[in-house]
Length: 244
Image (cartoon, rainbow, N blue to C red):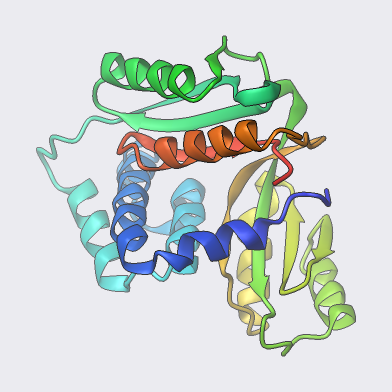
């Protein structure tokens, strides 16, 4: 799975800390609310696996516990008017880069129009469901910051495998641990119990292969496409196979 620097993307997001943090918390709040609703109103993560996954993601993003608690109370409250639905869009960026966009929206017409606009504006095109998702695998992805070199690769690898991980990848400043989606919560909990903290933790669409863009113009357009989508209030996640 090498060739795509997950740590690079995390550092880029954390670089614009204050500007990105509020938007990230807003998106996670949506996920918390939807997880509670889809879990039949259950706000206990021990009995709502999807909620447990989102809470792990929220904590990795440094979302305060008070914020999480308020979201759960809002989701469980009678008469809560939020009515989000999850819609996934697929398409191609410049140079044929495969792109998957996960959205949560209360207005599917608005969101569909925005997605088509983003793809068209930055040299891509919106495709049909399934046009690129076949080339991605859904995996649990846990990233451990090692920029201070406090962890030894062999020890992290042994701990990850003992906790049920499928694979681990050592990058320059981090370790990326992969799990089956159904094992994500158990592996995250087990590693947390061993004292590990995560820079990022969520279920992701991981490309089977990566694509390079030789043209600087195409690379610049791809960067703008990703930024535009990530800045869209309806967008939760953008997955792609661009080898940056």
